[in-house]
Image 1 (cartoon, rainbow over the protein chains, first blue to last red):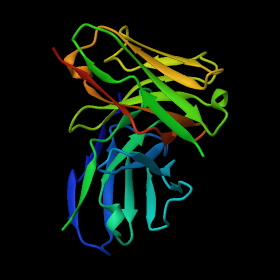
Image 2: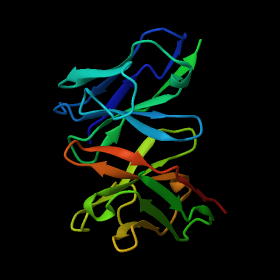
Image 3: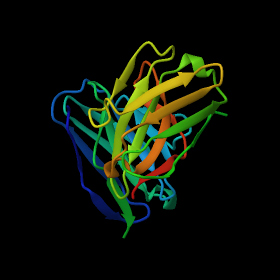
Amino acid sequence: DIQMTQTPSSMPASLGERVTISCRASQGISNYLNWYQQKPDGTIKPLIYYTSNLQSGVPSRFSGSGSGTDYSLTISSLEPEDFAMYYCQQYDSSPNTFGAGTKLELK
Amino acid sequence: EVQLVESGGGLVQPGRSLKLSCLASGFTFSNYGMNWIRQAPGKGLEWVASISSSSSYIYYADTVKGRFTISRDNAKNTLYLQMTSLRSEDTALYYCARLNNPYWYFDFWGPGTMVTVSS
C-alpha cells in the first residue's frame, strides 16, 4: 500500500496568514492526489482534486500543487471557517489511502 | 442537490452483525461508483470498500475483507454495508461517498453513521 505522510500534524495560525500543508507519498502517484476538509461536526468536503483542480464552490484562496511524490495544499489568507482538519488522499494505486491529517488551529 | 444519508449505526456486541444503508438523492445513482470510508474516534480516515455503478467491480480493505460486504440497489438509490464478525476496532463513524470518475476522488460525502462495537 502507498503510505501518505502529511505534515505538519497540527499548525497554529492566524487570520489572514498564508499556510501550506504538505503530503508525501511513498511512491509516485501521477498527480492522483486529493485534499479534503473536515469540520468539527464531522462534515467532509473535497477541496482540491487531481493535485490542483479546485472543487466547485471552494474559495479561490485554496490551491494545490505538486508532482511525483510531493504535494501541497496552500491557503493564501486564512478565514475563520478554514480552521479545521485537512486530509490528503492518493487514488493512483489500490487501495486508496489517506494522510493522517493536519489540524489547522487558531493561534 | 446531491444528498447522501447514512443510517443503521448503533451499539453492537463483538462478533455480531450490523447492516448500514446510505440513501442517495439528487443525482442518477446508477451512474456512479460508491464507497464506504470510516473514521475511528480521534483517528484519521480509512477507506473500507467500493462498488462500481453496476456492481461489477467490488473492492475491500484488507482489514474488513471476508467480514464486510458492500452492495447496492440502484432501483432504491441505496448503498449498503453488511458487517459481520464485528470487532472493537471496527468502532468508527462510517461515511458513504460518491466517486468522481475520471478524476478519482470522493466528491460528495454523507454526514456518517456511528458504529460502536462493545460488550
